[in-house]
Length: 183
Image 1 (cartoon, rainbow, N blue to C red):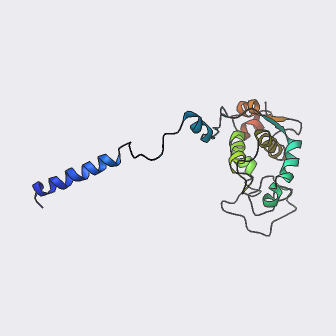
Image 2: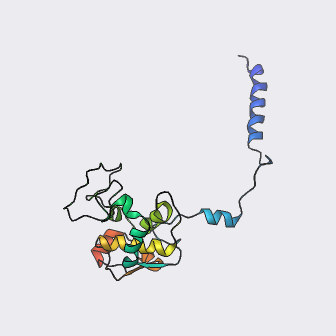
Image 3: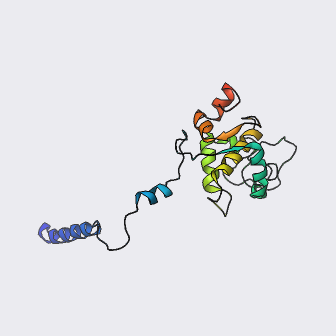
């Protein structure tokens, strides 16, 4: 095809692309800074974005049952179809197949997460199934403390709170190697 015949098509196409990039559609509006802040719920491994709060393993044990965690993860945190949260004693084996990716006793979810802040973020955003985002920060801290306690990372009496999770940004394995306790 002759370039002179192709030139009008190229110009027309470029104009269409330019109009598609136009900011004036007359539909919607730009979000406000407060709206963006409300949607930005991600928590980094350093935990700088964690909200204030605290929770104990004892509180977390009660919440684990009250919020229905046991329905998917099993009463003991293992042996069910959902990912294993608490390493079992080896006496029970699930007859149901493990969901992919399979997180079982060889790869416990609470130890699979490299940082407690990541575990906090996942619980906060994705649990309980069907009611995601309904847990209050203190409830998420308590559930995080419960899982860390039951997997031997922290002592039962320790609080999980924003300052401690931020200070433990070295990860679960680093805590175990140093003190077996959150700071």
